Image 1 (tube, rainbow, N blue to C red):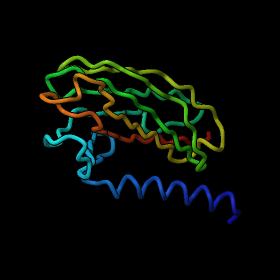
Image 2 (cartoon, rainbow, N blue to C red; image 1 turned 30 degrees about the vertical axis):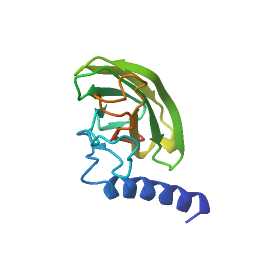
Image 3 (cartoon, one colour; image 1 turned 180 degrees about the horizontal axis):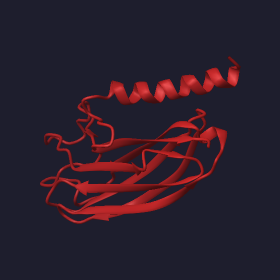
Length: 168
């Protein structure tokens, strides 16, 4: 095996291990959330304020193809929240690709935000096999809505989806 193949395999295994290590907090294609239990920046009890889901369809197709990616971010509390987020894409070859960012998305009380888009997936060797899209979001709500009587900011959520590509 070449050094590049071994490196790619290690990166894929690390990403899969990170997903599995976070179970039961992160569920693939079903949303998942975590809050840092060591965060004592506020005297009130930590409250999970946001949740996030990412889906990739179709899950399997012959390259070239189009993959539809949908992101949903939900506000779980009855006060306005602000979130930042990003999607990291790990290609089947093991190459990381960082491309999608959101900044300061305002969520109304108990509201949600959704965005879907189509991605052209070329017939490239680097896109064969399993490609992983990992969504990570963080509650960055500023004052006054991150101070008592409202929940503190800092809550995080993440989810992953997979899509497989095969050359014709």
